[in-house]
Image (cartoon, rainbow, N blue to C red):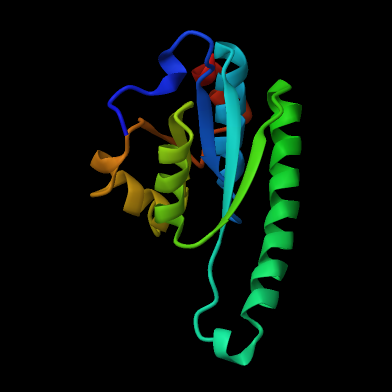
Length: 165
């Protein structure tokens, strides 16, 4: 991959990428990214990653488990897209992948050179920011070709609106 993202070239729009999961803080990342995308004229892409089955392949139920997880991810992405539309009138692109979350995030960023920012939500509990933020914002952060924006899960809509512009 080249050192320059396509989103900075004439005729391309930058994309804010949000990883959608079941955490309550995810709504904070969606709200921030949609508000920021609307404010800057960018677009938005949402990724949901389905965990592959571990030992069930030999039982013949692996495909069924993945399909069930895909359907749940699709519903989750539809709800997240509704949140983005309500927050800022943004219509996000929706992507579902099967695999390791960190790997699939990185692969999508490599494949779509219009992605300019990765937006993650940090947990607001005393257990820490969450495994995804800990993994990606820690040692893996230096390998990403885009900035990682971490939105604290405890921010209100009003605080996010003020920060997002």
